[in-house]
Image 1 (cartoon, chains in turn orange, blue):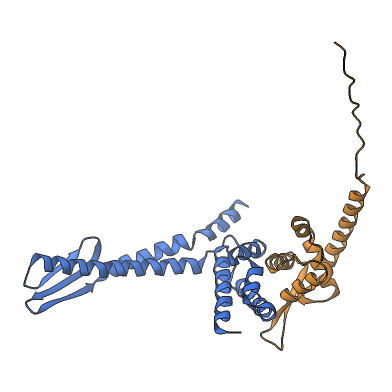
Image 2: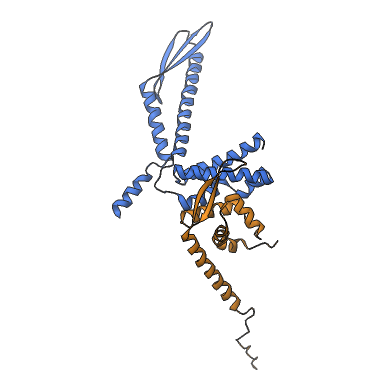
Length: 120
Length: 179
């Protein structure tokens, strides 16, 4: 599975989390597992958990406790109306960025002519 | 999960909790974050073992710092840290008293006095050490009076104030007045 640039991944982590939770509610460890399975094996819990806390504090996510058969109740996250709006804004920004990057030519032609050698 | 694994997880959770307190996260939010981390760690440990689960969260203090940035209240005192250091300070003060008592007894033995000796220790106000030394042996006793307890209380409050940063709420009221 492809490895991703850590800095770029950090920049789009909120977008990834909002996309995932827009589809289905989830709890911390399950979210990390889903993202790893979706092609982000480099993501670790130490990065995802604070990001979830930040999104909840910003009002993009809300949480509730759900009973678990295998242990204590888990804290589930679900996306809010504000989170959906943030997701739409983030996706639009992402598309713009991808289009802008694609529009930049891969190689830039040399514009400065080489000066001819002068005779002394 | 073995007892040792549970202890490892609980140690990480407690380090996380203490760091959250240090970074000004209030009680209810801290309890929630602590419970969430414990549940996630236990599940991750069940999947792949405790060591990888703990490695994946990195340093609990760093994790707490990042979580606290979202939910912390910088005007809240760090009560747990203040209390822990204050108790350590009082314990050390008591240890010093005990040590000084033994030093006093050694002094009486060295002097060769064969009668009861009673005295105080200059730097430990309110303490009275009595030593009975005769041909059969030596006995010592330490009496702690009011000034001793008062000093211990002042030390406790002083360390609690400094380590717990109890002045933090003043910033809030100052900023409210300024606003």
